[in-house]
Image (cartoon, each protein chain N blue to C red):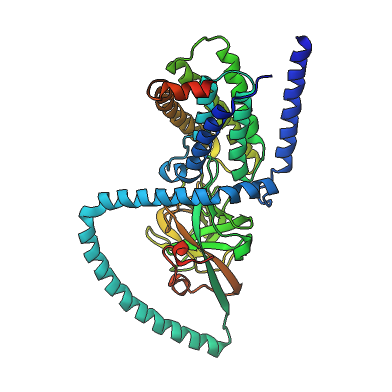
Length: 173
Length: 295
C-alpha cells in the first residue's frame, strides 16, 4: 500500500482548507444565483487528476467531503461518500488515459458535478427541503454544474500551464 | 489477486454501509450538532471570521468606488428623509402615549421585554440546497435554540442549533422556513415561506382572498405562530397575485434586510407577550459588535 508523501499531502490539504474557507465565507455572498460553484469538489478533482497513485486520492477526497459535512450539520457522511465516489469514478476512467488534457478534465469534472448535485438535491428532498419542483431542482443542478465546468476550465488551465512545475510535481509525488 | 479484489469490494461495502448508517443517524434537521461537528465549527470560527472580515472590506471598497458619484445626491436625499422621519417619530410617540393610556383604561396592557445579544456573521451554508448562517455567539453567551435573530432592517431568521461559541441561523428565506405574518397597515394575516429558487423573495399566502394589499406595503410578524413575537418588520410587497382557484391571495415579499450582505445581527431574548416596539429594540444596535468588545 502506497501512502501519500507528507509534504505533498500537507500542500494539498492546505489548498483544500482554503477552498473550504472560501466556500463557507465568500462564495455564498458573491454568487446569488440558485446554484453556486463547489470549490472543495474542484480542488479534490484537480488533485486527483494530477495525482492518481496509491491511496492518497481516496484519503484526500474523504477529507474534503468530511470538511463540508462537518459544517452542514445534516446527513453527516454524505459528502464523504460522494467525494469517494468521485475519486473512484475519476481514477477508473483515467486508467484508460496516459495524460490528462484540459478537455478531458473539464468533461470528467462536469459529469461528476452533475452526478453529485443530483444526489445532494435528492437528499435535500428526503430531508424535507422544498426545491421548487422539477424545474427548481433542474435549475439548481444545472447552474451548479455550469459554474463547476467554467471554474474547472480556469483552475485546471492554471494548474497545467501557470503553476510552477515544482509545485505540480510536489502534488504529483 | 482475486482475494485482493474481494477485499477491496468488501472494504468499499463496509465504508459505504458505515457512512449510510451515520447519515441515517444524523439526518434530522433540528438535531444538536455532535461533538466532532462542534469541534470543527469552533476550531475554524476564528479563521472564518477573519476571512469574512476581509470579504466585508473588499465588498465595502467596491461599493464605495461604484457608488461614489451618487453619494452626494444620496446624502441630500437622506438629510431630507431624516427631517421627515423625525416629524413622523414625534407624532408616533404622541400616539403611542395615547394608546398606552387607553389600554390602561381598558385593562389591556401587554408586557413584553426584549434584550439583544449582538453577533457577527462568520459563515454561510456552503452548498446550494439551503440558506443558513453561522454566527460567532453561542451557548456561552446565552444563545439558545429558536431565539429570534434580527438586523436593523427587520427579521433575519431564528437560531436552529447552538455550540459553545457559535450558532446556526435558519434564514427567513430558507426553503424550510414558514413565518406567520400580517400586512402592517391592516393586519391581514398570512404565512410567508422561503423559496430555494428565489433567494430574495418570500412567497406569502394571505388567508383572505379579498385582503387589501398593494406593492410597497410592509409585512410584519403576526401574533399567529409561537416562534416570533409580533411586530418585527419582515419585508415589502413586490407583487400581488391570486392563486389558481381564487381562494387565497399570493403575495411576493422582498425581505427588508439584505441577507446576502449581512455582517452583524442581534439575537433577541424575548419574555412576556405583546407587540415588539421595533424602533426601541434596534435603536442601539451596534454597527460592529466585535469592535466594542462584547462577548
